[in-house]
Image 1 (cartoon, rainbow, N blue to C red):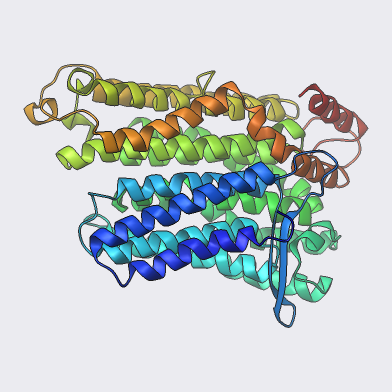
Image 2 (tube, rainbow, N blue to C red):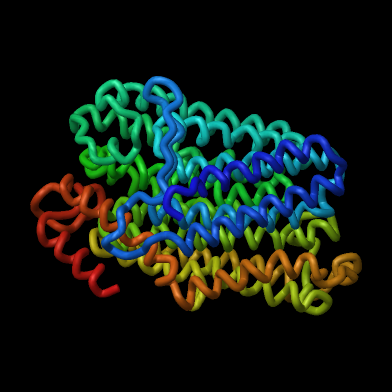
Length: 517
């Protein structure tokens, strides 16, 4: 597929669909959106099949470059990390359209257009190779989600949408200022060039903090996570799926693409900050999830805890941590999306998310109970499911540099088992105290078609993770090599609050780990 602009095509298809949805009726808009997202899914499969995973292949593939004005260009290209996140996006989008098929009844055309436009922007974020093109895509993604929450959300949707918009926008203003300084300093807007550029270590601290202000909110990291539960509770089901499944991953992608390779010395110096915030988040948000009475809030707080394991892994500065962080992002995108779909299934029947209103659903909804159990177990990190691989690798990477941090991260997983099993028991087991819940029908064929593909991929990732790790490995190797140059010589352990790994000892350790794969 050399020379074929498949990335531009993957953005053009949903854009054309979005425009078409604005000029047709509700029924036609649903079908246009479904066909556009399925077409993008097929293109995503072709992208994966044609991606060269051999170690001799260039890191950046499917590159497109079209100068627009000045230094700004339509520059696209992907490595294995971007490939996996684009694959996650195009996989979840048709499921989101299917989940909205009956639930959305007003302004259907505009709703479908908003989702398709968001798909364009999400693919653009992961494929952009121009700094300002990335910024435009990164920030513009706020607009359709703001509209989805604000127009089709719950009773407090206006408050939640404003909070979501303001939190995520304010952090990005600092990032834009930092980008303009970087372009002035380096003389280029090309992201691959900037990833190899050596900025002054003293300036790196300020640049790193400017990017951190944006990425920390997007993930979200504690304590700037408070917008997430409100956004999830008020968003329609499909909005929650894509918010948890893909939009939160933009923060992690930002750390991987910008903070770590462009500012390695600053990342090493400020790693204790990330570790401290992440350890607090893992325990605190897990405890908060444990006392929730609203299903969506529980899953939202669990997302903050899982994303904290991502940041722990990323800033372990070794291969196991980096690979694990990426696998947690992919696994969490699938599992959290599936859990929100499971909440949406019973919400559509009873129109309440209060856990106490349910109970004993395994009796009248056995198919639902089986799939919900699979996703709950995957969220806990059961071996054989997607999340186990990522959490195991992340914590192994963290353990190589700090026993204490690994212990705290593991505590979060234990608490995760507590709140997910507690949620499942209260919903699917016990007495059927409410007649309306006891009368709910089991999964329809449409709902089975939404949940079964995610279940299949969750098991695929758990049983054969190498198929997901292999495309990412060359990019992770390149990132690891870039970070190794910044690591101070000396002790290869980070104890709580100490500096980042390693001299030759840690480099050999991570290299040996990579060969073991």
